[in-house]
Amino acid sequence: MATSHLPFGLSKNLAALIILGLAVVVFIILRATRPDAQISPTTESVFSVRTLQVEPRALSPTLSLYGTAVAVNRAKLTAAVSADVLAVHARAGSRVAGNELLLELDNAEAEIALIQARASLQNAQAQLGQDRAQRANHIKALEHERALLTLAERAVNRAVNLRQQGALSEADLDATKSRLAQQKMALEQRQLSVAQADSITQQLRATVRSAEARLQRAELDLQRTQIRAPFDAAIIASAVATGDRVNPGQFLFELYDTTKLEIKAQIPNRYIGAMQRALAQGIPLEATAQVHGRTIPARFARLAASGGGGGQYAYFSIDPSELAIDSNVSLELALPAEAHAVAVPSNAIYDLSRVFRVTDGRLQAITIEKLGDFRPPGESSSTGGARHLLIRSAELRAGDQIIANQLPNAMSGLKVQIIQP
Image 1 (spheres, rainbow, N blue to C red):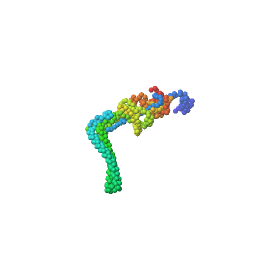
Image 2 (image 1 turned 30 degrees about the vertical axis):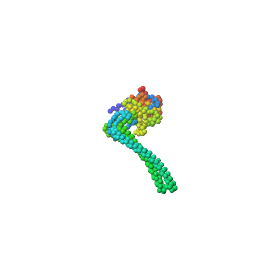
Image 3 (image 1 turned 90 degrees about the vertical axis):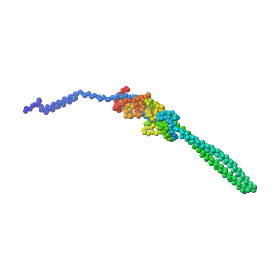
Image 4 (image 1 turned 45 degrees about the horizontal axis):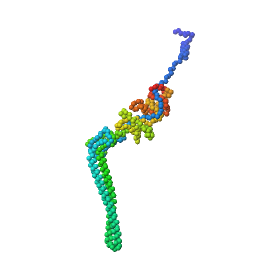
C-alpha cells in the first residue's frame, strides 16, 4: 500500500497536537472576550399589616364570669304539730306575699291542748294563792307564839319569886316551867312552818311558771296550725295535700325570698388580690349581667369565706325581679383600673405573650403582660364585636405602632408595610 504524505512533511501525530493546541487557544480567547452575565438581584418580601397606635393610660379590665342566681333567704318549712291538713293555698311556682296563708291544719287538737294548759295554770295560780294565805297565817301565828313565850317567861319569873317567898308550892313552880317549855316548843314549830313555807312557795311559783310556759306553747301550737309565708316568697316545692296527716318535723314547703337574690360566681385566683384591695379601699366594683337578652346592672357584694378549685366565689347583688333562683347568668365585672394599660384586639396577641411593634418598616417582638379582657366604651357583650384585651409592657411607649392582625410568619426583623384599615 502506498504511504500518504502530509503537507510540509508533518507526521500525523504532530498535526493532531497542533490542531488541539489551536482549539485550546481559540477557547481561551472566546472565554476571555465573552460579555459578562447579567445577575438578577433577589427581591425581599414585604408583608402588608394593619396597625394601631399605642396610648397607655389607666383602664379597667373586664372579667367575664358565669354565675348562678342564689337566694339570700331560702327556707324549708316543716310542721310543728300533729294535725290533719284542711286546705293547701299555695303550690310549687306560686308567688306569695309575706304572712300570706299557705296551709291550714285542723286546730281541734291544739284547742284541746290550749284548754288543758289554761286549766293547769289556773290550778297552779290557785294553789299559789292558797299558799300566800297560809303563809300570812303562819306569820301571824308566829307573832302570837312569840308573845305567848314572853308571857310564859314572865310567869316563870313570878313563880320563882313566889316560891322563894314561900307563897307558891314547888309543884306549881314546876307546872309554870312546864308551860314555858311547851311554849318554846310551839314557837320552834311555828318557826319551822314559816321556814318550810318559803320552799313551798318557791315550788308553787315554779309550778305557775311551768304552767304559763305550757300555755304559751299551746297558744303557739294553735298559731302553727296556720302556716304562713315568712317573707315575700316564691314556692319551690310543696309536699302536702288536703287530707294528709302531718307530724312535727315533716317537710311542707321550700321557698325563697323574692326580694333578696344574688349571683354567685367563681373568681379566678389571679384576680382575688385586686378585688380584696378594692374592698379594703372602699372602691365599688360594678358589673353587668345578661338576663333574657337584656343587660342589667349588678354590684360586687362580698367574697366567700373559703376558696378552692382554682378560684374563690363572689356574690353580686342584682334586681331580684329580673331573675329566677338557680338560673345561669353571664356577668362582666369591671376590675379596678390598671395604670399604663393598652387596649388591643385579641388578634394582636401572639403566642399568648407577645405583640409586634413596627420600627423602620420591620417587626420587633415585645413581651407583654395580660391584664384581662376589655370592653370598649359604648359596647356591650350583646352587641358582639371583636374581643379586646388589656396588656402592659415597659417596652411600649405612647405613639408606638403595633400590628393588629395575625401574620402567620411574624418574626422580629420581618419587613412590612402599613395599610390603612
